[in-house]
Each structure stands twice: as structure tokens, then as C-alpha cells.
Image 1 (cartoon, chains in turn red, purple, green, brown):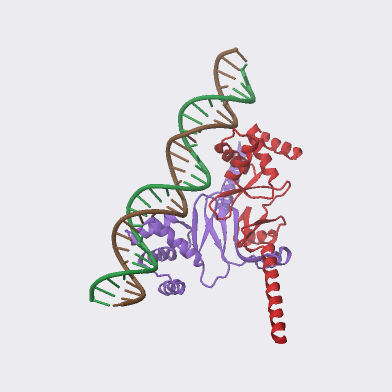
Image 2 (cartoon, rainbow over the protein chains, first blue to last red):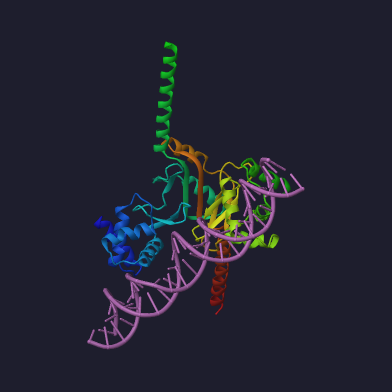
Length: 168
Length: 168
DNA sequence: TAAAAAAATTATAATCCTTCTAATTTATTG
DNA sequence: CAATAAATTAGAAGGATTATAATTTTTTTA
């Protein structure tokens, strides 16, 4: 964690920005919640626990700054708020997302699925790809498993009923 | 055009909705600007030309309704407004976008680039894909060509200078 | 066809997210 | 240490979207 903070500090310094206490608190919150997809408001509330004096505007400005420096990626899942996602260290492409339309969960895919597709886009559409956003909407593995379990149960009950009917 | 309107009318009726004059005017605007990616405000201003009495709220509600029925897709390119994009007739997947970070243009890719990727996601992550959003950010062919032309020009001028220098 | 009920629309207010502004604080430089 | 620059705070302002109440249009039903 500390190493990562230090590297981010260097990235800021390289562009003549400082890692102020407020900025550091914000980065820490992002690191501690790396799996989540926090909105600016979410970040603000969490940062307040560490640094109660911080203002919402500062959080917005810090997130904007981190986005500019490609330390975080700003993403929108269509629910009216922007969410902020730490870029994995060394990752040169933005990871992808699986949004469940049943339970609302958001999972991440770190694998680069688009290598070939991007090559094709550059060749066929003569478009120089710099970044991408790929999100799948559908049903997550948890909800699928829940469904299967329910179907299983229903089947068993039906079978039980049938057996009882046969007895009578 | 009329045929398309009629088919949309039927889709509405199938769900017990009516194609009111305001809704029809909105759909016409979307059809007439199929290449664009209009915001609700854009649509509102264009619909006003046909039906000046329409209210902004109606446009929003109509677009929401059309989105529910999968007649249009709501999409967000990160500029603070939602944009609405007619689904191509018969298309069972949402098309992709190329957003130019230099000139702001948005081009569409109708080809299904994700067939294999989606199969992989379903297998490997056990996620049932229902829809997707894929947007590339980069430099469009127009801007690339402009750049090349400028480089070409610069080269020519440099060569000219060199020749003149040799003369003297 | 007239009355009642339902659906849709209008205009405007309200809300929510985000950005801007002015005043203040903190850090940096000569 | 004074002067300048950078960053932050609190709150106002802005813009996009949604909610509300009154009105209009359409549909249903007697």
C-alpha cells in the first residue's frame, strides 16, 4: 500500500502536482476499496472518516486530477453518477465490467479481450485506438446459480408430489 | 420511413402504449437523424420545429419509453448528457462507437465484433450476456488524414529550404 | 352519445450531480 | 519574512433529469 502511494506521489510530482493530505486521503480510500466502483459522493463520505474537514469540491477536483493522470478511470454505468476505478498498476488498457441486471453487482474482467478487435478497428476504420470502454449487461454467476438452485428445488418438489400421487 | 413508423407503432401497441402525435414527432426526429447521437435537449429542439407545443418532460418520458422497449439505446460518452441512438431494425446487438478525442466526432460500427468475446465471457465468467456497450476513444480517420497532410506539407517546406540553402 | 375513468401532456417546481467562485489557508520562492 | 503561487473550503450556481399538479385528450362504459 505505502509503495503504491509513493508511486502515485511520484506520478503527481512528475506533472508538478503535490500529494496534499486531502489528496492522499482520497487515494487511500480508492486503494482500500479497489474492488468497488465508488461514486464521488461515496468517496467523499469515506474520506470524511479519515479527514473530516475535507470538502466535496476537493474530492471532485482530486478525482478529476487522478483521471487526467490516468491513475483512475471515470466510468458511467447509466445510473446517473460517474464512478471512479483505480487502474491496475502496469495495466495499459482499461479493464472491462460485468453489470448484473438482476442484483446490480459490478464485477471486473482484467484480461485484455480486445487485442484483436482493436487491431481490426485500426485497420478497417483507420481509427487510432487510445482507450476503450467495454461493459456487458446480463446476469451474473451468483444470480444464475441461485436460479438453478431454485429450479432444482422446484423439480424435487414436483417429483415428490408425483410420488405421493402414485401412492394414493 | 412510414413503414418503420408503423412497425414502431405496433411495438408500442403490443405493450398497451399509444403513438400520440408527440411521440410520433419524437420518433420522426430520431429517424431523420439516425446518424447522430442526440441528447434529450437536441431532440427537444428538433421536435419543437414539428410540434412547437411539446414540453421537454414529454420528450424525456418518450425517450425513456422507447428505451424500455429497446427501440432506442441510451448511451453516455462521458460528457454529462445521455444520448439516444435508434437501434437498427433486426439488429440483435447494440452497435459500437468510435469517439474522436481530437474533434469530438462519433462514428458507428455496425459489425458485430464481440461474438467470440461474448462466448468466452459466458463460458469463463459464467455470465449470461444480454447487452453490451463498447466505445473506443482515439483519433478518427479524418483527423489522422489531416495530420498526415500537415506532416507532408512540413516535409516539403523543409526540403525546399534545404534546396535553397544549397544554392547559396 | 354523455358521463366517468384512464392515459398522456404541459408547465413548472424540485432534485440531484457537478462545477464554479470568492475567501481563506498552506506551501514555496526570492 | 514578505510576496507569490497553489490548494482548499463552503456555499452558490449551473445543468440535466425527474416529479408534481393541473389540464387536456382518449377510451370505456352505461
